[in-house]
Amino acid sequence: MTGDGSSYDYAAEIRNAIRYERALAVKAVIPLAMVGLVIAVYQTVH
Amino acid sequence: MGASGGRLIAAWVLVAFVIAGAFPLVTGIYQYLLVIVHFSRLHYKRCAPWLPRTAILIPAWNEGAVIGTSIDRLMRLDYPADALRIYVVDDASTDETPRLVQAKAAEYPGNVFHLRRDKGGEGKAQTLNHGLATIMSDDWMQALLIMDADVVYERTSLRAMTRHLADPAVGAVTGYIQEGSRPGNYLTRFIAYEYITAQAAARRAQNVIGALACLAGGAQLHSRANIEAIGGRIDTGTLAEDTVSTFRTQLAGRRVLFEPHAKVWAEEPGSISALWKQRLRWARGNVQVTWRFRRVWFRPARAHRLGSLSFGAIWFSVFLLPVTLLLASASLVALYFVDSQLSHTAFKSLWIINVITYVFLLFYTLLIDPQSGRRSWRQGALFPGLVSLVIMASVLLSAQVNWLARNALVWAGVGYGHTVVASEVLFAYVWLAGSMAVAYLAKVVERDSGPGKYLSKVLLYLAGYGSLLCVITLTAYLKEFSRAEATWDKTMKTGKIGVPS
Image (cartoon, rainbow over all chains, first blue to last red; front, side, top):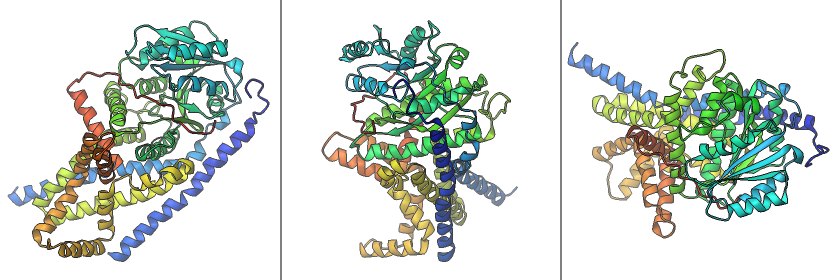
């Protein structure tokens, strides 16, 4: 800004932050799937 | 009880010690599981677009390379200029810091103030208190931001932090410190990866628990009420003044929050010796804090969550990591001579948990902060060290790796007899502790140029960055136990941060 706050869209910033945090939860599927893959490999070769 | 009974008990005690080695791994997974539910515990409902009058307090000793640019960047923050005051406490600098700050004070009248200490070198807390005395002498300040001279705030970061202070239950807020050295080197990329795990992930988990371990020294925002509640000054009794402030805030009944979207960039050490100096100070501070707040651990209270089981487990899993590694390693070796089959099972169980933790944390870490992840994914993959990765592979694909090792040794003319197999097994058992010795060696042989420069890098890649942190913590225990003199060794900064302005 600095000073008048004209470019400050507070609601949009909060919305983006919440969206990012929700997306992080969804992204956890990938590392969990990788762990599943490792366990499957282990069970296959042992 | 007969000799065999005693032997059995000894064997199972040793197994328990080996399994205890999995404690840091399990808490690591637990923290990352908490990251998944972070979205459900956000504080934004209690936030408001509040832009309090903020005093920025910067301790500075010989910061000529960075201080001018830092002030300019602060004045370009997306924040009302009439609500910002920057106090640079010049800790008896002998370089051009005083002249530069005075020039900035003239350039930004009413916004930048130069405070000079004639006697310096006493420590960061004393320097901060010099500035606090001035700031608290009138009622202008509504919020206090303590930062380092070299850190760079993204333009929206300060207001992303102040919005939480609209809730009077919140005493302090910290931002997300990211490694910003450009072009950087292998070590700063290790640190970049470490900061995603230790800050972006771990602090989100602590938000969920409701207890924060530490306000980052370079990005801690306090409400005026909180500064008054903790006595109007920074504690000078430890090397971890930021952690003490964090604990005192929460013990006084105020919340401390991590705002992951307030991004702050810092220049981190580019050599093992500089990193060692910085982290030894932090680790010794943590030993002091652990002892000082000994009556807090595992004692749940209504006013705060520092005494919760979750928080205690997380704190001690990091604090005791070298001990658990040494214990697991020694127990495996002892167990080998008591019951080799049982030692093999215990070893395999421990390392399977290690593999699962490694895979889960690596992939999630890179997704939590893709920007830093893109820069540091190689160091992330090699974080446990090459030798540990080979051990993981041998546990996961034992038949295949053993076949490879056998053929390689036969090809090399070494053979694959009982002695070789026993040596291989004992090496793997000792490695948890041995990796710390190799990491220490990396520090010892490090030189600015020549073979030492490359040898230290090779040794660190073999041992793993985590082992380096462990051996630093171990050194901190020994220094504190022997009451070695605690000096304030400042990390020198060169202003090589290359981030969005």
